[in-house]
Length: 436
Image (tube, rainbow, N blue to C red):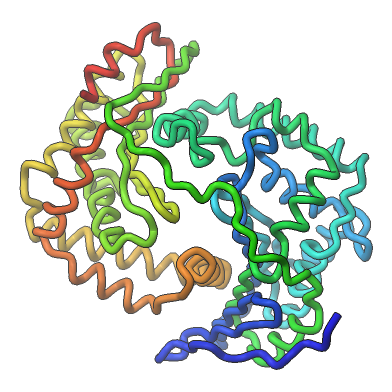
């Protein structure tokens, strides 16, 4: 391997909230020095997820996320990996999403060197021993069964099938029982070699760390290949939805589980914060319209909430609720009524003001922990190509006016509604009428 060249500080923010360094081979390192914290968190993010998989290899990104924890040449067992971080009171974990896979560790600030060593070891040298692959396949299949037995979670998968029909975004991150059964150690190794490379890597660190020393440690220990600039699968945008749709799973349950929504904004769309506020008005918190109407006023549901989900070129806004089966259609009609109310009626300025303050407060509080801060920086850099200071996002929220809400509501909330429902129902017809 060639001697590492000196890194370049690319774009520290004006208020020095973080620094961005380009490492050899295209990896990017973000460092947020927070001397008032007792911890340090390191997140490694690769730009690969379930969106970039073929249907035949569905779930391989998630499967690999499991496999790397089974051992490396230096730490040849899952126990050795876990004890390395837990031995200093730290936490080690990972997650896989549609467009990214991340590995993270949170440790006492004095042991940030250990977090670097363990995480780089995991992603650079997993053993992928065939017997461990078979053992972990069983674990993942059990995880899938657990997921299928939780209708309050599985209904979202049905909803995403309806939202992204025939597109990789509509497939579960975990894959299917059939696809997971096909995955091999050879498949895993090929996937690693293609995607776990410097071109595809963002490292983000937050906490009581010395950025210069940390950067040198990472440069010295980073042994991943540069990788090729190949086009990856899953880059085509989803096709247009032209009509309402229903995905129904008939199951004998005591409570029906519903997810309904419509196409929204990508995370690059300039209207993304506006749609986020619309979702907050509808169903984020006990003071939201859906909670007050469906639960407090009508007594139809116990839980109801709304949220947005964003991808590179697409996204959605969704409403989820749990309801007694005989009240399901009425609850759906009430939720749709609240959605359409925002199309027809201007949002009062005092309500908008409250929602903006709620949103800003949640955002600021959510970034207090070193792990959440590192993850926030890493995702922005990986997916959006740069990190905006938190003040910029707060200013964008502050600038939203009732007219912006009305414009985006008329553009987005008039799109065809898609619905998924799990419960003891024999027909799609009443649900299709409720959303049409």
